[in-house]
Image 1 (cartoon, rainbow, N blue to C red):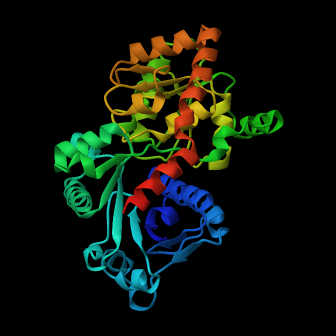
Image 2: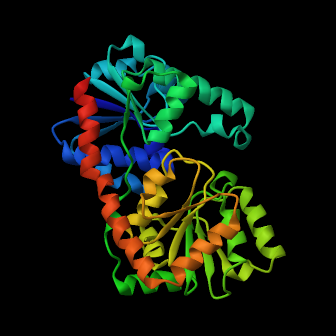
Image 3: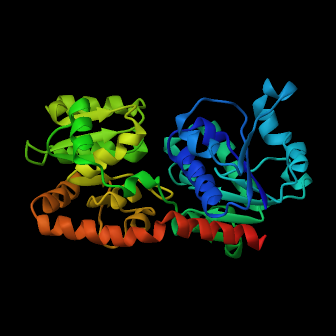
Length: 373
């Protein structure tokens, strides 16, 4: 098959949607090398995370030229019909919740991956104009696509409830993470990286954008209830919410125990995970929660929040707490820190559970959707 992808996030984003998009094309081009994969991206951007894709003979990047180089958004939504015809594309996959408006005119079969409808469930985290645009784009993509991939059962229920899309049109295919999280870091490298960045000796880890929805503040509040030798490390992109977290830490004399790393190298993430005592992810709502998968592959006990799909990501042997209850979170952290046998059991069972998110399993599931169309 000749398969096209909306590659905006692949080129431009280094977090959630970008990681998912790169992952899909990487595993598909690896496990199904007879297909041809065309990545339609509105802008060129140097990004070391594209090295794997650029090295694949069956992957080709396509960028706008001529007039549309000045108006890449117009090219992305309206002008890719000719690109698809010129490359005899059989199928187009919108990897991040949307499809080009020109798709109906192409005759090309379409798949869209929908990650979450958080902007509907938690509108307070989004501007009104963004909510209106997202609803229009997501709803249109779900209605016009030949198949919809939902990244969790939770997201599937929301698509059915909010957009009234028939269940038979939706397939749940979970996400996975970069294969680097499966590999144990050499001890020498681990010690070098921890020293280089000034990691504390004993820490609880959080990974994710430092934004209100991800709820890092709850972990800081829980830290106040834990022994002074326990520190909190947070790795993620900064937003204005980080100031709220830092102010609380300052006002409660916790700053020396709270370590926030913005711009931490992605290739060193496994070091952070494999050095942590516990991983916490108290997000109010997620479409799936890739950091939970990264932690499970890394062998770290996981504590996540109730209320969305995180039980699907973390499995039956992780802990789940109310995202507004710091006492419950602190209690669960203490339970793991004070019981090495429990920590070991959670680590081992987590590694067994996460096998269902193996990249080859997911690649086979996606290929089945493609072939069905």
